[in-house]
Image (cartoon, rainbow, N blue to C red):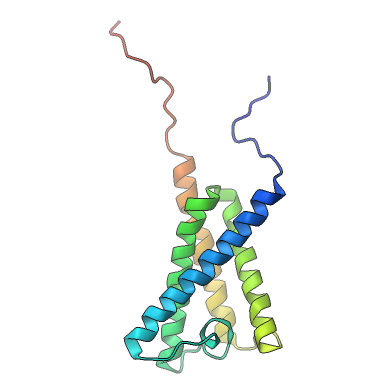
Length: 156
C-alpha cells in the first residue's frame, strides 16, 4: 500500500480559484491600507496609488506612505497564504503569481512597463516579505506535532 500522506492531486480548478482569491486579498487589503494611509494625511484616493509606478518614491511623503501601505499589504497577504494556501512549498509560487499579475495590471494601466527603480525595489521587497513570512507560517503549521496515540493511557 502506498502512503497517502500529503499526496498531491492535480486540481486546476483549485489552483485557479486560489490564484483569484489571492488577487482579491492583495487588492482588497492594499485598498484598505491605502485608505488608512490617505486618511492620515488627508489625501484623495485614486487608482494611481495602486497601479501608477510614479506614485511610489522616496522623495515625497505620499510616496513613502504608499510604500508603507505596500509593505503592510505584503504582511497581510502572507496571512492569506497561511490561511488559504496552507502549503509552504507553494507560497513562493503564489507570491510571484500575485505580483506578476500586478505588474501586468500596472503595464496595462500605464501603457508601458514600470520604469521607476523605487517601484521595482518595493515590489521585490514585498515579494520577499510575503513569500518568507507566508512560508514560515505554513511550515510552522505543517510541522506541528501529530498526535500518535489518542486513546486512554494505561499505567503499566
